[in-house]
Image 1: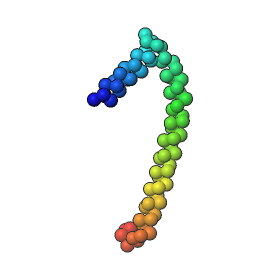
Image 2: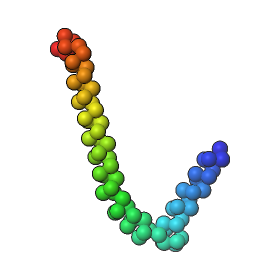
Image 3: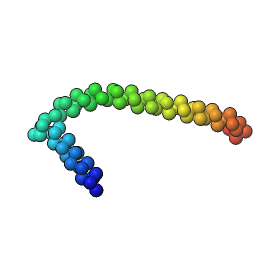
Image 4: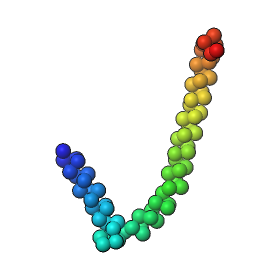
Length: 71
């Protein structure tokens, strides 16, 4: 329960800080997002690539273990 209340307090503080009537950090938030999105896209792409490679290896290993069931 404490964690939920604390989480709501932090969410409200973050929203109020970004509003123009609050601290007016919206421009800084946008600059951060513009910088973070390409990095995040690269990380997501790498994870997807590694998952795809692992999937191909798993399929090849399964095919090698039971070639009669591969049909």
